[in-house]
Length: 161
Image (tube, one colour):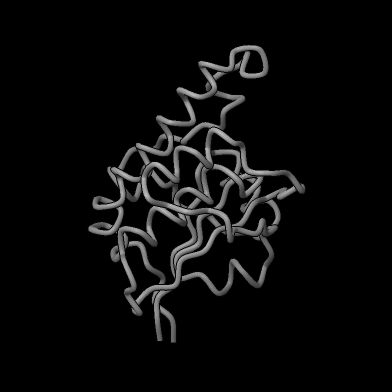
């Protein structure tokens, strides 16, 4: 049975979605893994055009992505559920009673959140260039971090049955 990895953020249209597609690209068509993502809120919203553009430049096509809200079933099915931020960790702890690991902990052992745009660029609504730059940085960071993620993920997998 394949191992499943679930990335979790807020809206499931930026960090967790990018991590899902970046890991799928890094793994290729490896039947040993199922990779997915979900959001703690996942309110209906479109993928930001600058995010879509950056992903396409990296050879990642997010056009088939559909937002999903995190559920107990999704969480229970994941061998490695990974949160992007501290707020996601707290949400999962409060709603599902689970302690989850951060993306940066898997990659490099750092207890460090990967911030959402509004957290990293407080004036993101007025500062389009800073917003674009941050989105590009996150996409590039997640894509470049996948070799470390892959190298380390086995030690964090939950062993089932």
